Length: 320
Image 1: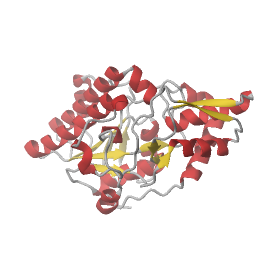
Image 2: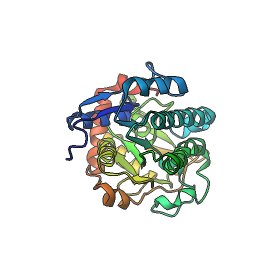
Image 3: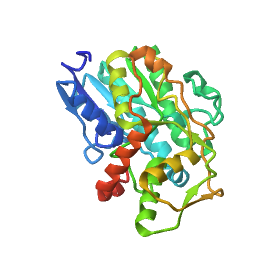
């Protein structure tokens, strides 16, 4: 572990969120001089003046921008304009405030939702601009990708030191299990646990089960973010992933097995599958800053299910 953080004041946006909480825990293990992590009730990052005031008041050495407005396929279909504008404004204002204040380093979190719908698998960072994202999450993906353009333009014109990371689908303890915003793993865990407890004989799952996803345990993702903060200063975007792809149909079977639900799965093919396939090439992260995911998927899933069972009210209450 490097001494990078020892004398640093780190400002983390979205520190109360899923990934943010894991990043803050990782910072606690790195003897950081000072950490600021205001939540959305303290500062609205969609407000340029408020964002500039935050950066000016805290005067950080590093900004890690994790704040985002996110949701699964359902939220992306119901609120595409909100997700586009919220994420565009937050990222734009944070990056510009960091540039104007001369913050020595800024870390921006993108998303693999920015990749084109039919990206060759595994996803290489060079493929980002080779097509339009999958329609159900395109507004979110395009808004996040705009920050990469801004970041690289600022580097060229002003010499701003900022990096751009793209984690694949995250899961783990602390995830959001509210149906209005949950992603695929927490949504399926909740369905199976509810069905088991109620004695239901089946669950309904969106899509056909043919789409595939890649899943990254949240603590692994946090470690990747911190390693990149310590060791990476390049202008090119970097994937954070496992290089392991899983069809949703197989995922459902594993979750059913781990939860202990013994009913039927009914697929609702009238609902969208989302992007057909997702698996990223993680080699740039391994070469640039030594990141490799370490948590076995089954073990990570067991931890997630256990956390959900023990924290039902908290898990289902979180909506942002």
